[in-house]
Image 1 (cartoon, helix red, strand yellow):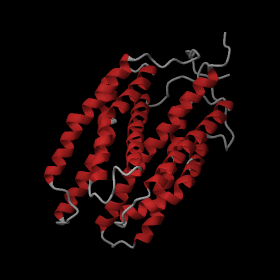
Image 2 (tube, helix red, strand yellow; image 1 turned 45 degrees about the vertical axis):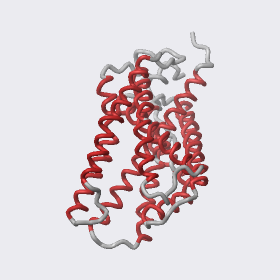
Image 3 (cartoon, helix red, strand yellow; image 1 turned 180 degrees about the vertical axis):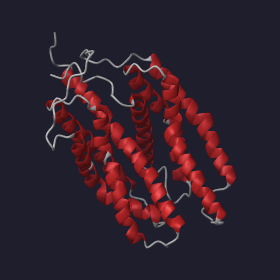
Image 4 (tube, one colour; image 1 turned 90 degrees about the horizontal axis):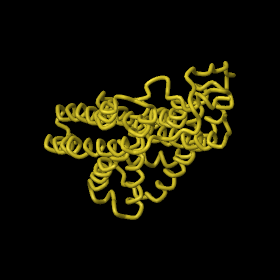
Length: 315
């Protein structure tokens, strides 16, 4: 019943959708490679700085994937502003992280804290971003736009089909709110140990277990999103693009809410800078988690919906 509308581009912000999915693919691949190398022993917290350096290098190299994914999606939406899409893919999330880091580092330097980063290191990171990461994103986008457009099995109609009024449990906002509970529950135990090592200066070595939990998290996000998207299509709601992204991405909202409860066990000082650093960096971590889990849900749903609508016979 919705075959003529199911592949209609998102009604709102199709470019932002492509940017977020591409950025999520980049962060997800970077995290997977880093955890795999840590699990086999190539990277170790005992070698101070090796894990952070490897993460930055892998993130830059994975810029090709971000450009490729965002450009392929944007091309399938018949977007015109491909230069702007590629530029925002290369600068949006890294720019947010870099601006936040510089802000906090300036405050720490003002208080003459030993946790502040020297100015030369900031220049090196900025040079790596501008001279390596951004060109790689544009390189990936070049191959993405040169590749064939994503083939949709059905033809989209000119006029959008009206969506019936859903029941309470079939409302998209209800599905998005509840969908993140399952992936969050799958990673809850491991999240406690990661938070402890991150904020209590404890070494973390069980990367093999982290790899298993990370894979389980991604699989759970994909399965939950596909199931909810199928129910939405059965309810004749063909606007599934953003729904798929935020259904699995809502895991990040539960993680951020959990950080408020975990902060009480930190027994931190009452200084304002402590709250700013903790919740500021947790916001960045949860934003990255939103992009990763959301991109997994969106790409899996796209594959699933192409498969099921490719089997129908339409005159």
